[in-house]
Amino acid sequence: MSEVENLLHQLLGDIIVFILFLAITTITIFWVPFYVKTKKMNPEERKKYIEELQRKKHEKYLQNAFGCTNPKLICPHCQIQGTIRAKSEKRLLSTTGKIGGILKTNTTSTTIQHVTQHHCDNCGSTWDI
Ligand SMILES: [Zn+2]
Image 1: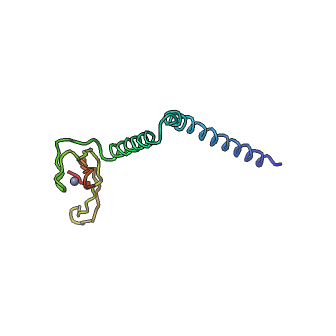
Image 2: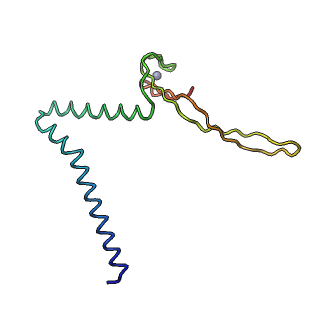
Image 3: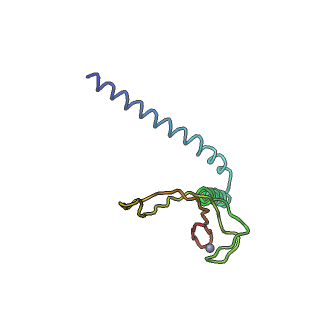
C-alpha cells in the first residue's frame, strides 16, 4: 500500500471514530436524561411532558427570532393585546441616486438602518417600525 493510501485510510478511520464519539456524546447528553425522566411516567404524563418540552422549544425559537412578548402592545392587524414580540434589528437600505457635478453618474448606496421588528403570535404578522 502506498503512503498516500495509508494516510487516507488513517484519516477515514479518524473521521469514523470522531462521528461515533459525537453520536455517543449526543445520546448520553440528550437521550439518557430524557429516558430516565420519562421511564417512570405513565403514558399520559409522558405525553404531557413531551408537549411541554415542545412548547418550550417553540417559545425559545420565537424568542430568538422575534424577541420577548410585550404585554402592553396591541396588534394593529388583529387588535389582540399581549401577543406582540419586539426586537431591534438592522436592515440594509439601498438607495439609487445621481451624484456628481457636471458628469452625473448613477450610484447605489447601501446604509444600515436600525429598526424595531414587531411580530404578532396571534395572526403571524411581522412588521418594522
Ligand atoms: Zn395580530
